Structure formats: structure tokens, C-alpha cells
Length: 386
Ligand code: KIV
Ligand code: ZN
Image (cartoon, rainbow, N blue to C red; front, side, top):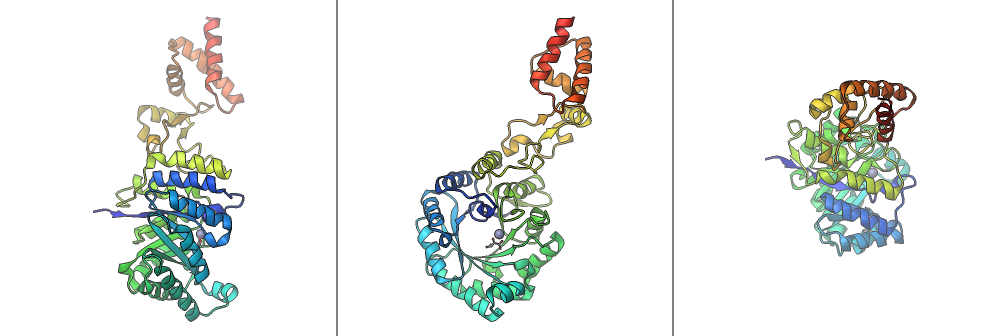
């Protein structure tokens, strides 16, 4: 029986912390509705104590979402927790997500607290949240740079106080996969009561390792992945939902795990988030980039036309694209050209094709991508000449 990984989407909370990515309530509602249809298990809708606008958005999302749990973030203080609950109380499945930093550097310079005091604050916060709901998540901010034994101690204490999910964030994107996987193993093995809670991970992408770290953590036993659409988020972003989900989907032998995600909705959701936030997706971005299913070299195009699996590890339809794209350019071969012309309903003789191919190569030296209009002009020219 495969393990099921809980997909916790924080596009509307941590994703909104991307520079320039603020969204209004109506926009957040549209994204939340798409996330619900995509099949995410938890939608982190916002941080209600941070502003009246965020409170309003979280309340509206809570009233609207049909299937997913709706989480609200709050610091480990009664006032924040009360505000979070007020915003999510009408959700079908509300979750309170409270956090406090646990690394020595954060304790000394930011919180100015000792470890005992931090444990006390965390336990008090979880106990207070439990008065409202049984669904409480606790995050140890800067967890990857926290003393592993202290991490186990604080997680054990909050689980005893009623936390049902404990989250280990790599807040500053400092972790590397081998160490992060080891840390997850250590926490799973040494946290008292861990068998009564889900261990979650939340990675940032400062070294470009967010997805790799998340997968290492899942392989080591983590049961929840915190992610955002297109990987948007603070600084270099968060783990991208589409990358984790498609890695699990494409490599079932390595990751015998399932998610509830309808992968065919991945592209549409990515496009929506990009158009609402104004954050462009880089063309070579895995899964959702404009070039993710494009093939330009002649050798690749030839292979693709014979059997797509020669150069494609997943079908574009799986992520909601209708087709892949053979980009015609100077590296393309005759086979790819003929195939595109046939799709355009041109059936040329061998001789005509040779002439078009020659002009095509000459044009491709001057113009990076040859589009259908260029081909029409080339064919018309050849047919008129003959
Ligand atoms: O990166 C982080 O540590 C966070 C927590 C609040 C979960 O976003
Ligand atoms: Zn974060």
C-alpha cells in the first residue's frame, strides 16, 4: 500500500511574500477555487493578524472552499491565534498553523529568549489553539539550522500539547538533500509521540535545492510537503508544487507514494497564478515553463516523431497541455519539417520538399524560430516557381 503525501499549498500566504506579488481578495478567491479543484489537501489562505485585508481574504476563502482544509498562519501568541480562528471558523475543515523560531541565532538576536521559554511559548500556543480545533500545526521556524535534539524536544512537547502536524522548515534555503533527509530521519526516530503526528517539511529555494530537499525528506518519512504554485515565494521562492507532484508521479519505483493532485490541472493553475501575481515563469522552468515540452534539435525532433518517450519523460497531456511543441529552427531536420507541413495540410513531392528545406535552412540562419506563417511563405514561393 503506497503512502499518501499531504500537499499543503501556501501560494496565498508564503507565495504572496514574493516581492511584488500582492493579491486582492477576489484574486485570492479565484486561486483558492483552482487549488481546491487541483486537489490540494490544505490551502494556507493567509496570515489574518497581519492586516485587515488578509483577515478578510482568509474569511472569504474559508466560506468558499469545498474540499480542502483551510489553514491560517499565526505567531505563537493568544491574540494571533484568536484572530486566525476568527477568520477560519466557518471553513469546512479549519486548521490553525502556529509558529515560533527555534534556532539559536533566532533565539538570541530576534526573540531574545532562552530555549526553555521558547518551548513554553510553543506549548502554550498549541494548547490555546486546541481549544478551538483538533487540527493544529506547529512550525519550528529556521528548523534546519536548529540543534536537532532541541528540535525533537520542542516537537515532542507540542505533540503532547495536541499538535497533529509538526513542520520542519528550511526557512533560509540552507539545507542540502543528504543532510536534510538525515535530519528528518533523526526527528522521526527521536521525537517522543511522533507516531501520533505528521511530520511536514517546508523548503525555500535559495540554493536551488527546495524540490530536492523536499523529495529527500519525503523519502526519509515526511508525510506532508509545503509547496507553492510555480515555486513563488519569499526571495528565491518555495518548493514548487508541480515539481514535487510530478517527481512522485513520474518515478513511482523510487517514490512509492501518492498525492490527491489532478495533474491535468497543473498548467492552468500555473498560468492563473502567473497572470494574477504578474510573476512570469522562466521559459526553462520544469513542468510549467514555456519550453518544458519544446524540442528544437533535429536529433531530438526525429526521435520524438518516432516515439515521444525517446526524449520526453512525461506526456504533456499529463500536466494539462494539449501537445508538445517541436520548435522549427536551424537545428531542425527534414523529417520535422515534413511532419509540420503535413500537419498544415501541405503534401509536397520529394523535390518540392528539398527546395523548401533549403530555403528553410537559409531563413533559419537569420531567424531564430520558424513559425507557420514563414512556412506558408516558403511553400507558396516554391509552388509559384514550379
Ligand atoms: O519559511 C518558514 O519558516 C515559514 C514558516 C512560517 C512556516 O514560512
Ligand atoms: Zn516559508
